[in-house]
Image (tube, rainbow, N blue to C red; front, side):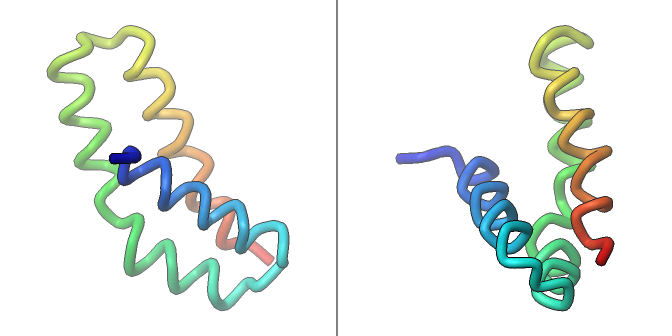
Length: 68
């Protein structure tokens, strides 16, 4: 089964391409609000290495996707 976060980020990219600002904001607020917890969980296992860096990049970029 595909990775859940990957599917949600893929849908987010669809919203970005179609420039639907309200839908992006709603999607981030209602479906991607748990990414910070995911980063913490990854840090606990990965100990600040490769996957931690990728998760932190996603965490930093996601809020910017809600901008018009």
